[in-house]
Image (cartoon, rainbow, N blue to C red):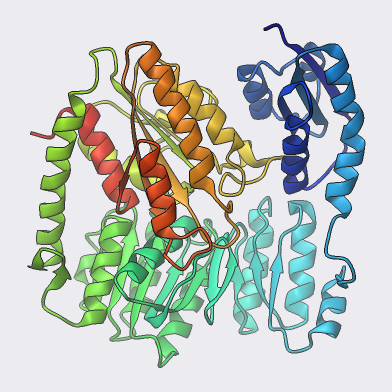
Length: 532
C-alpha cells in the first residue's frame, strides 16, 4: 500500500520528552495513521526518521532546536487530519495533571509546603539545572541532580560547596538513588538490609541491588554520584563523602562501590578511604585494573556487576561458602559452574544459525549494562565490538543509528534522548532498532536488557515481546532463525514484577538469563563458537 508522509516543523519549540512520547502515541492511534513521530530535529533523530520512512526534505533542513511532527498515513486527508490535532494533543499533555493538587514552581515554595523536606530532586533542562541546584543547596537540602548537560566546572563547584556544608550533591545525571528505602529516579523495590551502595553508574546500582534482593540481602542506602564524579577533574568528591557517611552509619555492615574505571589518582583516594574502616568493602571498577584494589585487607575486588552482587551477599552472610541451589560453592566455583552450563547452552543454540549469521547486536537501555556486556565480550570475541559508548575510542561506531559487525548500542546516550524519553520509559526507539537488526541477514543474536521498577515503563515486556515475535517471523520468512537473549533488572516487588516480566519475554521466544553478565556471556559464546 502506498503511504503518504507529511511533516510539520515548529521552530524553537520545547516540550518535555514524555509529552512528546504521549503525543506520538495518540497520533499513531488515529484513523489511517500507520506511523508517527514527535521529536526534536537532532541528527540522530533524523537518521531514525529516515530508517522509518518518515524523513522529508523539509525535516532535513530543520535544526536541533526545532520540533518535528511526522505522520505516515493511508492518504493525504488522513495525514492532514492527524497534523491538525497535534496542537491540541501537545497542549493537553503539557497541561495535564491531577486536578486540585498544588504544585510549587520554586524550591522556596516547595519548602513552604513541606518544611521538613531535606532532599531536592531536580529534573529540568540542563541550562536551568545548575541554578536550581544552587538554590536547593542554599536552603540546606541534599540534591539529587537527575538533569544532565551541566558543565564540568559547575559540577565541581556544586560538589565542593556540598562537601564543605555537609550535604550530598548526587549527579548530575544521577538516575538512581535509594535513600532510607525511598526510591528516587529509576529505582527498584528493595528490602532493607546491611549493605550500603555508592555508585557512579545508575543501572549498575540497580543491577547489583536487585541481584542482592533476589538473594534476600537488602540495603541501607543506595547513593548515586553521577557518572563524572570519579574523573580526575572532579576527584571523586561525592563518592568519598558517601563512603565516609556509610562508614559512620552503624546500620551499614558492608559497603559496595560501583563505577566504570576511575582516574588513577581517584582510585588511590577511594582505596585510602576504604582502608580507613574495617568494614568489608566490595569494589567493582567495571573493566578497570583491579590489582591495587586486591592489596587492601578489607577490600574485595569484583570484575562484573554479577560478581559484585555475589561477593557482597557472601560478605553479608559471613559464611565460608555461598549457598546456591545445587549446594555450597565458593563464589568463583559457583561462577565456573554457571559458565560451564552457559557453554553447553550456547553449543545447542548455535546449531540454529546459518553460515551468514555472524554478528551479535546488543540494544541496551542501561549504559552500565551496555558497558558490562562489552567488558565480557572483550574476553570472548575475536573481533572488536563497536559502540556509541565504546570501551576504547577506536571501537566507536561511525554512525550510532547503524550497526557495524558486532555492535552494542546504548540507547540511553544523550544523542538518543534529546527530545525523546529515556528508553526505560519509552520502547519506541528500541522497537524500531530491533526490527532494523532483524532485517540484517548477518545478525545472529540480539541481546536486550529489560529494566523494570519505579519510573520505568509499566509493561516493557509486552511491547518488546510483540516486537520479538514479529522479528522472529521476519527472519523465518527469509529462512533464518534469530536468537534473542535478555536479562531483567528488577525484583518481584517492583510494579511490573520480575516473574511476570520474565515469563512474558519467554513466551515471546526470548532466552532470559539471571543477570546481565550471564546474558552477555551466553550471547558472546553463541557467536564466538567458544562454547567447547
